[in-house]
Image (cartoon, rainbow, N blue to C red; front, side, top):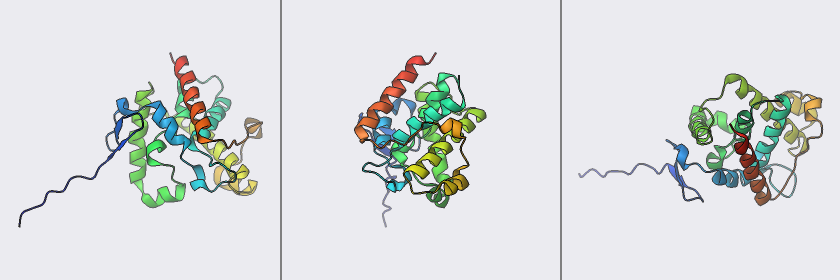
Length: 202
């Protein structure tokens, strides 16, 4: 019998910018901030299980994480604030999976995320791998944001949030509030914030 050759499965996505991003071997030149901002503004955190008339988007979360990071590490070089803003950038193509789903999938998700993160970093002048200390500071900001989201819009009690995300420093959290806005508005703010930080890069 003649052997039928099978085409490999498609592993790229066409972006609204016209770029074709290979998810298995992402090239920095195929990454555009407009695509990231658009994608993240339409990806819901918490699998969409949040109060309000709009989903709480990854773009809105990223803006908050960058603000919290600046409070945690005052005087940090602007490149690390940019890294905080971009910390979830790969989710513009792979979505936001809650931790239990990531655990069920196994290491494959993490490997894909790492490849995309490295490409995003190189595209915007950051090192492919962040210094360990900076990565920890961004993760701390991420967990503080998750605590605030959990309590304000995701139905957690403060005690539950403390158990899962750690008890926050009240001084750091002072005045912070979760905002639920239309995706187009968040997309514009994310793009603008990226532009501001890029303009300050040495």
